[in-house]
Amino acid sequence: MKASLAGRQKGAVAIEFAIVFLMFFAVFYGLLTYSLPMLMVQSFNQASSEAVRRCVALDPASGTYAADVNNLARQTLEQQLAWLPGSLGFQFATDATVTLSGTRLLTVSVHYSKAKITSTLPVLVLPGIGEVPRLPATLTTQTSLQL
Image (cartoon, rainbow, N blue to C red; front, side, top):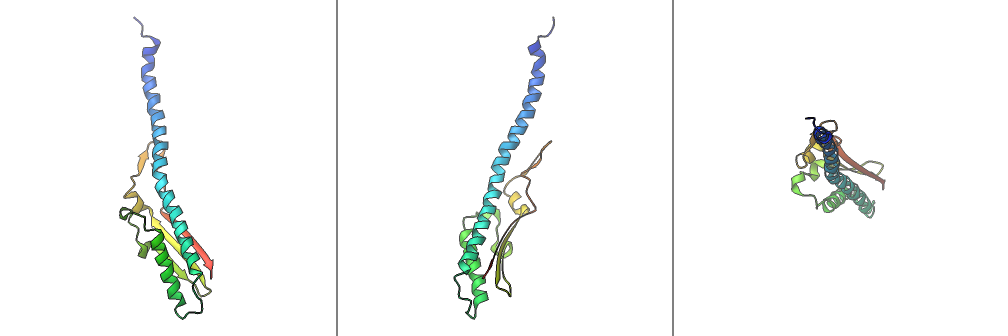
């Protein structure tokens, strides 16, 4: 008795399903895992922009102008990024920098390492696709304004 065409195709269907499932799973997992880093980068951009904007209101003739700018920028960053959960390990003292140059160029930067986010968000290595999510070594934002 000969095997029917349908009987011979069952193995091929299983292999095709495995390949298609892997691709769809990678897309779905990528969608979920890229959303948090993207949200964080946008929040860092918004927070650093707001910190720079608020420093415009300070009086440059003040004797403590540099210290006031530094304090206000850091305070604004902390207010804007207060929503970040502690599990992400964001530290304002080390991950955010505020610099005011001699030419009164205020620069607010946020540098968040990949190691901190991968401790919360697991990275999968899928065959044929690679690491998901594939992130840079540091999520970085920077905002500057001449005061």
